[in-house]
Length: 431
View 1: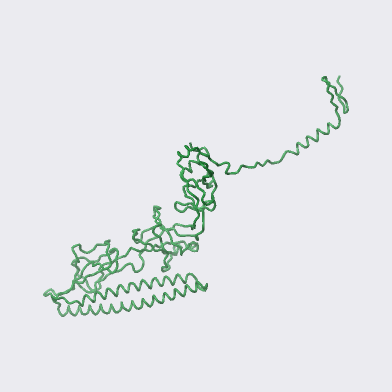
View 2: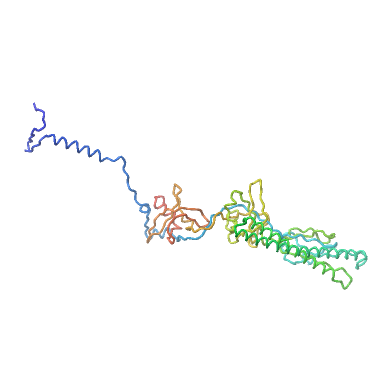
């Protein structure tokens, strides 16, 4: 029977080897196991590779040609954030006029084309119809009663012309007073002793006074011309036909008479509206008014999304209006309607600046790519047929431009056409 080994015994092997079992060997074994246990860490942290090292793509010359890759450089320029509101075209004050007959007479046409119909485009000073003053049926010379009527008409015209001249003088005084008030309001605002609202109210008052003065001048000129027509004697003792002209150019909005119709003095003949310049009324929620840059021009967009930025919308000072039911206040912009062809009451989109202009990075909107988490990326050309995917922070899209909060350096070429194909190539979704 083999005896159990004790510490300190010598063990011999057949090959001649000797092993001594000792306390020292037993102690080393326990120390080794303890060191091994202490080397086990509770967590293992692996350093990830750099992001660009995972997203670098190198194409062959043939692959780059087949993808049709085009690039555009990153630029920097001043932009402002905009918001689109619904606007409505309106006719400014002083751009619509009603023409009435000065005396009783019979309506006649001026030429073979007849009286213009509503919607006809007319020019300032164009004769739209003529008025034959009423005479007796028995003879072609005025009777005493008709002479009295003509004298009364002349007196009425002279009185009206005197009132119109007075309106012109008063309008000139009001314009001068409004200019003084506007200068005073601007000076107070510049000295920080007044509010911006005072300047806007003064500008609105000046615009109204100027429109009133223009209308008074037109009315005074028309009455003076009519008085001159009545004073022209007829060589054949016949009444001289009065040619009724339009003071302004535009479209005939209403035609209230027809050829051969007898009209009394003061009857409305027609209305002409000038559409060359229109105001766009933009209702804005009252809580957004403080964020709107009311002094900056706006841009027009059609309801279908077409860009009409070629025609700027200039802010104008108009009488303040608001709607309590919708909690909105109105902003007014003036546009040149000769190319737009808008009609009063027509709806149109208006992009209003909501922030001051600031320098931002700009790339084409076609270069922006989105991953499944909503992150935005672009592919930058870093070498010959070599592209890297880089992260960008998108602020907003302005037409064909993407405004970035952060992105590649200025001048870096980014891929526009072929960006989606590179994205698919990187993640295995493309061929």
